[in-house]
Image (cartoon, rainbow, N blue to C red; front, side, top):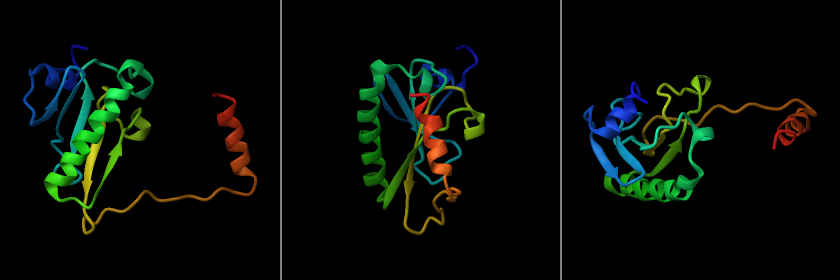
Length: 135
C-alpha cells in the first residue's frame, strides 16, 4: 500500500532503528515506547490486522516473536514482557498495517495490568452463546 508508513519503513524509504529482518518480517524500535526497548514486528506483506494476516506466515510469526522477545528481555535485563496487537481503531490501532508490540517490563516500571470488570449473573452464559454462534 503506497501511503502506509510501515510499508515505507520496510522498503527503507523511511528510516528506522532495525532490530531484525528476514524474508517475511521486519522489526524495529518504536519511536514512542511504553518502555525503552519497545519493539514493533511487522509483516513485510501489507495486511490490515489479524483477520488479514496470511495463514502461511502464522507459524513463522510465532518463532520471530519468541526470538525477538528473548533478545529484548535478555538484552535489557527485563523482568518480563508483554506482546500485544491492536486491531481496529476502537482497540487503539493507529497504523492500519498489522503489527505486534513487544514491550519489555520491569518490576518497578509503574505500569499496571488492564482493569478488570465483572459479569452480572447469567451474563457469562449469554456472552458465551453469542461468541459460539459465530465460530
